[in-house]
Length: 262
Image 1 (cartoon, helix red, strand yellow):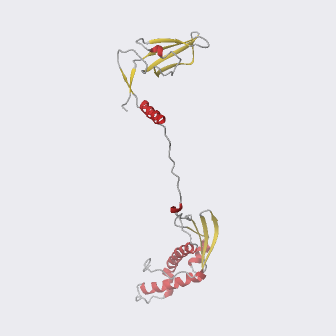
Image 2: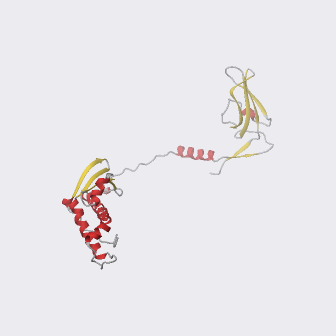
Image 3: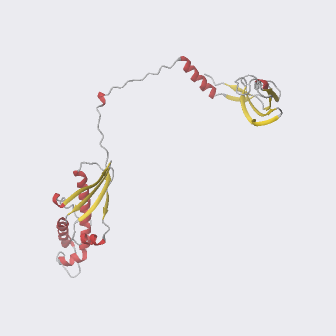
């Protein structure tokens, strides 16, 4: 169609030719029904057809001399589609502006699915009606920050707490290195395999492999780990309460703990 998409914006929709009804309002969600009068659409359609008539060139006719009825037959439907599209853009924008709301996104536009009703609109026989739904940005009150008073919290940390924190960090940074041909001593980390027995019978949970213990830190049966000090590769220990318990362990080479410098 000649000049399609090149015509300037039409006059603003007349207030009396546009009806907006709020159909839903929940939280930040809004839904509006917008109706544009048939007379407004017809007026816009006539104005646009006059523009097309001056531009169209058809074989057998001089430019601008093609009968309007013939132009309507060829381009009437597409011209009305343009009119409808522009009317929707203008009215949806005006509907939001008149409410003084800020949409969070472009409104969703929905038309009727009734083909007969759509045909009436495109033929200029019916009002244009559509639904627009959108969410709005919430209103945020700007506070005068100069009026706010803040209380600065000061943490009172004792020397003991600082020392403990530093010690814990040092302990977590310990590196263990193997020293060959040296008996295990206090502070060494041992890796052991052990089997525990009560009255000579193995019991559930009394067996482990590659278990790491540190001599002198009381992580096992009292006296057992200390009994692993020295060069021998196997040790036994007995429980001091309940049934006689014997745990026999095989130790791997001791690892010396090297503390990082402070």
